[in-house]
Length: 255
Image (tube, rainbow, N blue to C red; front, side, top):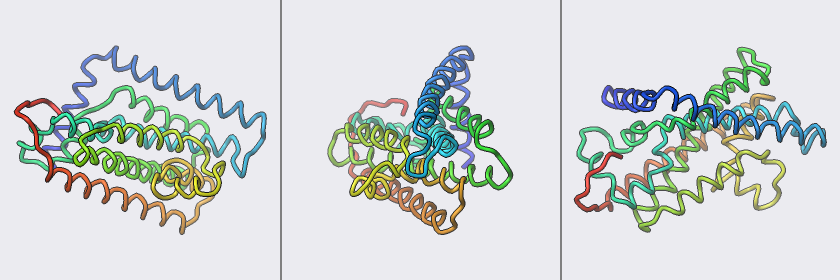
């Protein structure tokens, strides 16, 4: 555990080394998030509400999504790159270390740009989420559950590269999940909506945590925790099975 913590501190120190570049990248992502929020505010200003969603609830969704996404894509950015690392044969250096491979890979790289998501998400909830002790606690746990679900899905899909030798599927899965997560799940109907509650767990990354903050439901909260646990385990299992198949050339590189 000390080694992993030291690795994460080293990755953050590396990202922080160029202070001006750090804040420039963070600011760019914050501005991007602001533009997306402005779109939703203008949209609901026009329509009022849509299938139970209004301005307040969509802002909660964006707060949870950017916070959870920032945690994974910013602090654990290699979750998105597992497929690329496997397909390009870049795991040799990590395998040689006396630490668990997957946790080491996850904390080895910090993506500065996506830290802007994390800062924006917290700020958005503070400004527009009507924070109270109970709502903040639900927001915090919901964001963590969102992050675990997102990380598990990305690792599982990315680890398929161990078996098929390509990583395009991981990127497609990432973009699909982020795109669907940014919309209220109730705008989808039929099989598409069922898909977002199951195979592609977009509902549990944004919409469900936002709904729980707005109106807490113990049963739905329990399902969210269960889904996060399932995808976390799925990611770990697929990665472990894939690692047994992993073969590489003699190139050593920093993962």
